[in-house]
Length: 148
View 1 (cartoon, rainbow, N blue to C red):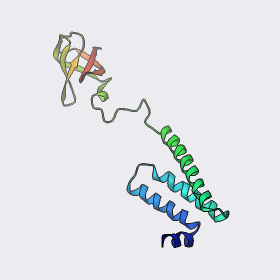
View 2: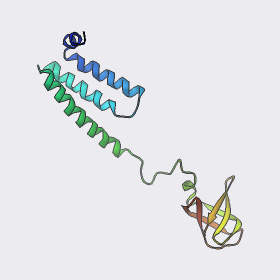
View 3: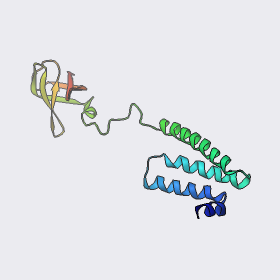
View 4: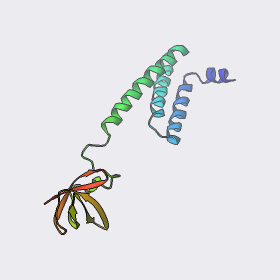
């Protein structure tokens, strides 16, 4: 039955496979199946215009799948996050560069500042409470501050 379907569809089988692979990408996104779908549609287009054996069609599919996956990986790699992009999911790292006033004195390298509605543990040089500081880094779960 499957053999009859393959023979009956002929070159159109590649287009059907391409559409099915694209549908898999929609329901299980990961930008991987789409490149196989592209390869299948290209092979379907070639098979419609040139009479090829099934072995050549499968070989073309493997080659085009590899090429499209590499090309897709290269394209997605360029559009990755920039180094200077703000650390959206790192709340501590987002505080770097902000000015603050020491809530408690920095004694023995440890103290507290208030940023917005949160009291943060900070480390830095010994300073009295009320000193204006700037958050310069994040280290060991604490904000590192320096006097302004």
